[in-house]
Image (cartoon, rainbow, N blue to C red; front, side):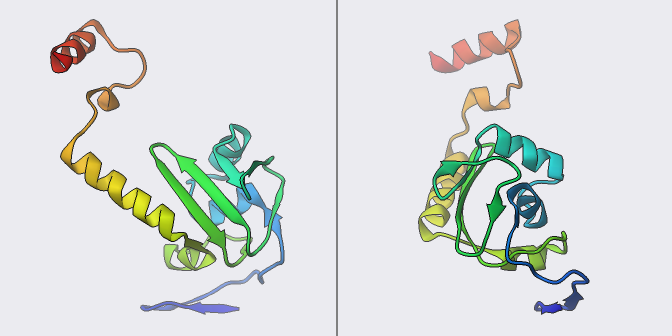
Length: 140
């Protein structure tokens, strides 16, 4: 099977299937860098399929609505294709379609981040004494 993009044609050695595991699909669609990160996100409930929590081995099929929360961003996507193998980003983008609401919400969040950055967003973990003083100074 070959998938054509604007710049090249990518030949997929593994044919498309009807269903696959949700963690494998999220990895192949490039929402997560590794499959274990995708599995961990599904286990923590950061991935919803048809508005329900699922386990990493749950099957995903075309037409499913998947909600992925990764960091501060949330995607709502419709599954269009199932591929078992991770390919180039151009191929991964053909596997899903983001909903209009999700696109608009992510766009407004990006605009808000551009104009105002939360002071606590730069702090990882528990704030140090210096970080706490800076936070208190910013609030007053």
